[in-house]
Amino acid sequence: MSKILVTKPFQAPFEEITAEMQRAWDAQWLTNNGPLLKEFEAGLNAYLGTKDCAVVSNGTVAIQVALQALGIKGEVITTPFSYVATTSTIVWEGCTPVFVDIDAKTFNIDPVQIESAITEKTSAILATHVFGVPCDVEAIERIAKTHNLKVIYDAAHCFGTKINGVSVLNYGDLSTLSLHATKLMHSVEGGAIFVNDSSSKVEGLTEPVSPLRYTVNRLRNFGHFGPEVFDGVGINAKNSEIHAAIGLVNLRYADEIMTDRERQHERYDQGLETLALTKPEIAENVDWNKSYYPVVFKSQEEALHVLDGLEACRIYARRYFYPALNTLPYIVRPGKTPNAATISTSILCLPLYFGLEDEKITRVIEEVVRLCNEFRS
Ligand code: T4K
Image 1 (cartoon, rainbow, N blue to C red):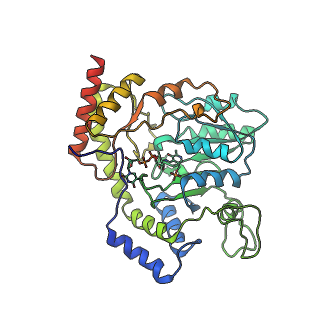
Image 2 (cartoon, helix red, strand yellow):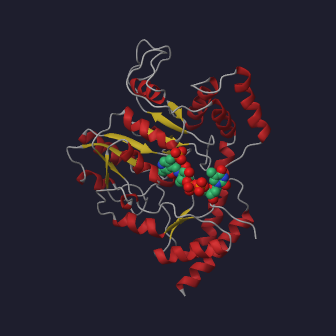
């Protein structure tokens, strides 16, 4: 019986990849904000309907640069239900994560709980649109305005998700995307920072950029302002022309990748209906990219029974996202987050990736149904 992994990277035809890489080779320009990277940024903006995207080396460093660019210090209100990078970046930047619970319907940070966690030390909200399902962005914006807080969205999973027809990446002061190989859209390793700064352009620069984009550019390139001048501390968060070449080719397949997710979700939805598992609720005004297939079981025991049983059949679901981030060993202020505790312990993401065959999805469905019924009987 063949293995079914939770995910596999999308692979465009190799000749297309090499043809695009050839351009970088011929130009002998391999990294440092080269022409392919700029094309990739423009391509992302054009496809997503975003204004200003800065490509960086991965989705983790994208959050770090975002925190630095907005001068975030002190306490950052955040979600306990996300990938570890959402929390580790806050700690890495010397800030304190303050966890508030998630909404049991969307699995995203509950805005009602944000307000009561604000103190005089709070400087930002860092929320994840988990599995590409948008947070309550309007409520979060209202709270941020009232309390003068910055908003960063960890939008790692959000390529293609829209609210009222507009990319979710257009929300927050900054939104960050992951372009890691296992993401719906990728450049092998990579990330992007979407800058939502409509203030006037910085004077004296060759390229017209907003003040916030200027800061992001400077931070991702060691703080360089020209070859000999350094405007503050920076880091190397650049991405290469080789990664950009792969990203550019993958972008050509974006529609196909998104449509294929529809097929797979439909099949899972139909096949698993009788089990009445909990799935994230999608608001009517949202076009969800369906980047994952998360299902919450009735209990942790049921989820683990299914996980182990699937593994015995060479089907590898994953506990995305377990453990809840406020239970990480380095967290000093875990707070109380009962919804996150329940969901993180009883959730599984089922296999989902471009080209996953119908027969394999049927095999996963049959095993999940069998194992669940076995556990419940
Ligand atoms: N914020 C959020 C909310 C995130 O989810 C992430 C990353 C980030 C921030 C940070 O973004 P990056 O810095 O990564 O750009 C993976 C990914 O490494 C990580 O990118 C991702 N989220 C996270 C949810 O998942 P693992 O440890 O689960 O992946 P791994 O390597 O075990 O692979 C999963 C499956 O895919 C395996 O069955 C093997 C298969 N696979 C994987 C790779 C890399 C392949 O078949 N081929 C491959 O090349 O973390």
